[in-house]
Structure formats: structure tokens, C-alpha cells
Amino acid sequence: MIHPLEPSEMPDQSYDVIVCGSGSSGSVVARRLSDDPSINVLLIESGGMEYSDTITHAARWPENIGGPQDWGFMSEPVAGLNGRALLMSMGKVVGGSSSINAMIWARGHRNDWDYYASESGDPAWGYQAIQEHYRTIEEYRGVADLPRGTDGPVTVFQPSQRHPIATALVAAAESLGIPRFSNPNGRMMEERSGCSLSDIRADGETRMTIFDSYLRPVLGRQNLTILTGATVERIAIESGRAVGVDVVEGRRRHHFRATHQVVLSTGSINTPRILMQSGIGHESELTRLGVPIVQHLPGVGENLQDHICFPSIFEYRDAIEPRGNGSAATIYTAVRSDSASPDVMMCQGEFPICSPEIARQHFVPQHAWSLVAGLAQPRSRGRVRLRSSDPREKVILDLNALSDPDDVKTAKAAVELSREIGAQAQLRELTKREAFPGATYGNELDLFIREAAVPFWHQTCTAKMGRDEMSVVDANLKVYGVENLMVADGSIFPRIPTGNTMAPCVVVGERAARILTS
Figure 1 (cartoon, rainbow, N blue to C red):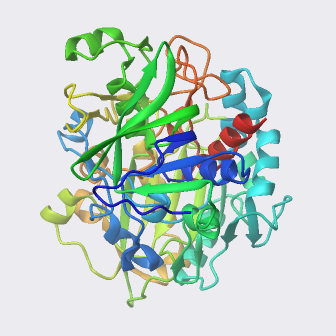
Figure 2 (spheres, rainbow, N blue to C red):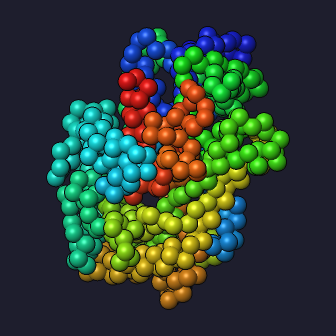
Figure 3 (cartoon, rainbow, N blue to C red):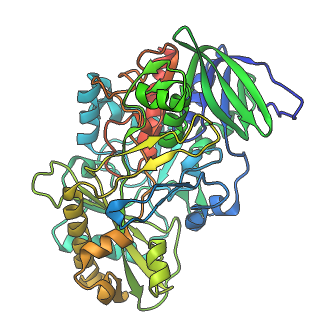
């Protein structure tokens, strides 16, 4: 059950397992472990338990970005984006980013999961094995072309109120030779190219978070304690073994002991921060900052990836209000001849989506829709670093976007394809003009991609799973060189999944729980 904490009150300070973070992986781990009444679980969340109206009302998700329930991380100025710094959003509330995102459910491509199996050396991370996880996770309410789960905790919908732009977008993509599929998470995730109506986590106008699906139904359990408004500063490590966590709650500091395991599920920015503050990272960097070294792992904070995207904007002929989650169609395709799987991902926005710089410099029509094309498999790599040894200091986010020339080529090809799709007859019936790039940028696509680029907010890969010297965790998600310490969130992916990252993070949570209870 939830044990409320007053400033002068302390709960039992010893637990079997401490899970840090209640997002798309942490909520799953805490729920699955607490299914065993003999396991005493503490779940720690920096944000609060209450949802704002912008969270519960699906179409209002853009208002969450940069809002009070967003960590609001900012990157350093990015040379490849003409020196622009990008807002790197991440949910600071129960449910984590599943509570503030666009609610799109994407399983990840076959090639992604098979690559993870190859990198980890464990076939349990392969595509066929992961499909079994999804069948226990999902309660699918859509048209399936491969077996889907029907009684899992995560209800997945296809949009019930289909926006005219979504239907037209799929038809336009198909007219250009992109195959149409009945849903985006079956056979489409085994091909180089495809288009479909999206799978989403919204029941009509109402968001469904991963916390709601996994933990809200079991909040009365005696072996589950949820502490909100508390931030993990560092992991306590004794003789090479994780034994607890140091936590700040308001103005108070607490120390909680873990007798069996500490699980970090705090996301691809906070997870490397906590590891480094705990003395786990590159020894030269930690020495420079005066952090005592516990374990030299040079890969901590490296390999940062996101699906950087470049929205094209089209003005409506007649205004059409957003419906559902405001994004009901998905396209994956390959624009590079050497790509074995999609290298471009697209989603439709039923409102204008653009960078702050474009919004400040140009007139953006209010009644417009967006085709948001992003790099599905970026080749550029960034990093997360500590600014100082003080855990209260914000980290340094070197996004390094578009530093690889191939990413620039792919970005231009993605925008060109967006313009071609937008010009098809099915969309011209609804569209007055292409506003951006449009005449404003003309054929200056190099300038456009650098000024228009925004993240999908799919930060991943900063504590990667693998077997080389830059790997942070093994196939069982155990941190190398430290006993009783596991990472279970999107930071463990060796490379970013194709598509939105919520669903793969749920799989990570399920895998972690099975590993801990097997």
C-alpha cells in the first residue's frame, strides 16, 4: 500500500528490492515483483501522483512538453543545428514519459530485437522471443495480421475517431508505393517500408499510462511502498555490492537499504547521472570531478541517441480539430539503399508542430497539420556527462545531432519524401498549401533541417547492454562489476529502437522482472 510520508516520519528503511523510477519500465518491474507477496518492494518517484488535465486529456499532450511535470532537460548548443539547444523532455510524474508523451505504441522492428540478441549474446532478446512478451503484455483492440495479446495489462487501441488527415495520409503513402498494413505492429515491423493507422494508448480522448495499467490496480498491496516527490541522488555501494540508495525528499535526506537488489529505471539521462554520482563511470572523468571511483565503466553516459525529426507543415483548407491523441497514422520507410530496415519514421500531427526558432522567425498558420519525419536509425552519437560532483547540478547533454554526414543526407531525403506525400491528391483535397518548408525555405533543405529539427524525446542507449568495453550491463541487465545492481529502462538498448520507445521499455521492465524472479 502507499505509505504517506510526513516530513518527520520515516517508513521501514529496509526493503528486499528498491526500484528507482515509475516510468514505462519501473512501473512494470515494481508490479511484477510485488505479485509475489514475499517480496517487499519500494518504488521511488521524483514526480507526484496527481495527473494534470493536460495528461488525462489525450489531445493536449503538447502542453505537457516543458510543463511542470516535465524534467525539462536542455541540451548543450548543437553545432549541427546551427548552435541551437534542444529541450529534451522526460516525464516527472508517476508513469514517467508514458504520462506526457503522444501515446503511440510501437513494438520495435524485427532487426532491432535480433540486433539486441546478437549484441548481448542472449537469444531471449531476439525478435521471436520478444513477441511472446508482447502477447502477455497487450490487450489489443484493433485489426491484427499476426497474433496479438488479448488479456494483458496494456490495452492498445487503433483510433476510434479517425481524423480525415490520418486516413488520407495512409492513402497518399500507398499511392507512392509504400505498402499499407492493417496495423503497424505486425508484419509491418518485419519489412523495410509500410504505412498504417497507429496503435495508441488512448481510449477515445483519455490517456492511459503505464502506471495506470500496471500499478494503479494494486495500490493496496502491503508489500508495495510508493514514495513520490523523492529524488535518488546515488546508490550506496559497499564492497562492490549495491546495498541501498540515498534519496532527497523535499529538504530531507533519507537512506533506504536494499537486501537483494537496486533497480535503476530512471531514464537515459538520470540513469547515467546516478551511476556516475555513485562512482560508476569513466575513471578519468570521475577523478576530474572528485567522485570516488567504484567501478570503471567508460560506456556510462555514452551512446546517447534520439529520433531527431523535421516536421513539414501543411495549412488546412478548412480547419479540422484534433481528435484522440492528435496523431493517428504512422509511416516507416527506407530511403538509403543500404538500409535493411526502415531508416525514416513518420507520424502525422493534427496541429502545427515546429521548432521554437521557426515559430519565432516565421508566421505559422494556426489551422495546419504536420508530417513529422525523423531519423529512425541515426548514426550520430551524443553523451551525458556530470557537470560537477554535486547531485543537484544539471547534467551536460551533448546531443551531437547531425554530426554524421549520412544523417544529414537521410534528413533531407525524409523531408523531400514528406513534401511528396503531402502533394498527393488524397491530401490536396484537405490542404491549402505547404507552409514549411514551403516558399520560406524553397530548396534550402540544409538550412531547413537545421532550423526545424526537434527531438521525438526518445532518449535512449546511455547504459547499453552488450559485451564490449563500452557496455554497461550484461544480457541480464546487471551492471558490470557491481553486485545487486540492475538497469531496466531505455538506456540499455545498444541502439535506438525503430519507432516510439514506450513499448520496448515495457518489454525491458518485463524482462527485468523475469530475470529477478527466475
